[in-house]
Image (tube, rainbow, N blue to C red):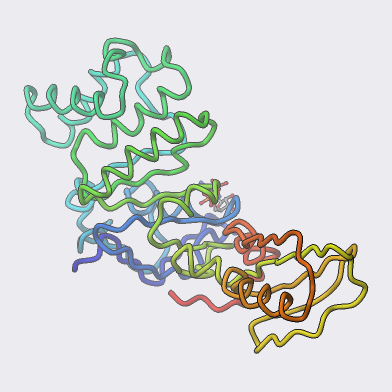
Length: 315
Ligand SMILES: Nc1ncnc2c1ncn2[C@@H]1O[C@H](COP(=O)(O)OP(=O)(O)OP(=O)(O)O)[C@@H](O)[C@H]1O
């Protein structure tokens, strides 16, 4: 299958600042791809190069096979962008803003009206169609940015922090909307600071750190790299760890406040064997807790002090 985005050794310098330092990535068509990274990692620069707002300093960037600079028009027409900043014509009714946008991409006037209405309905703000952007609530503004990205019926939807500052209800609505779009075949590139969002939505995530790709992986694989913690509480608190056969499944065994505490990369798999073994050895268990590593913990670990670079980018 054709790649929606194909990036090779992409570089960007702003004066002395290196924003992208040799990024290579491939985003398969139809995927839901997350781009994560701490502030200043280069995510917005990456997106801006794809949509032609920033010129690259080196490397290659293609969207559905089209070079983003030499075939700008072909590449750009396939992309819908919902940016982080509200860069909207504030004085026109939002329906008109969408019609202009569609017209700019070569869509005839009557079809542009239909597309505008459909996009506003899709994001649930059709009843606000005659209102100007300034007068929308913060959440409606976010929805509108997505409508504007959708009005050209893009094959690649790029969402730069789409849920920044929105309430929980709207966040869930937006998740539902973009999941539906993805299920309908639209490739999604999402940047987010909400790790939960990436965990829940993305098939694959790239972690960008200091302008380099730290890793590309599924959220599950990333979480497996972290360590789970199993805590066992006994009727009679213990003083020293019981003698248990760990078969290499366990990283560390200790005692805290009379409880047994075990670190293991796959805590959920280890726990049943552990319970059986302790039971057979006569320990009376009153509570068992397995806390899974979150993607957030792995992310923080990987991007701490630029340590991710040493982790070996695999892109
Ligand atoms: N126009 C510019 N001129 C100079 N430096 C810039 C410019 N745009 C971005 N930078 C710098 O490039 C680096 C990457 O910035 P970028 O905005 O791409 O990061 P980001 O990952 O999107 O960050 P955030 O999560 O905070 O939005 C930062 O050091 C930033 O200060």
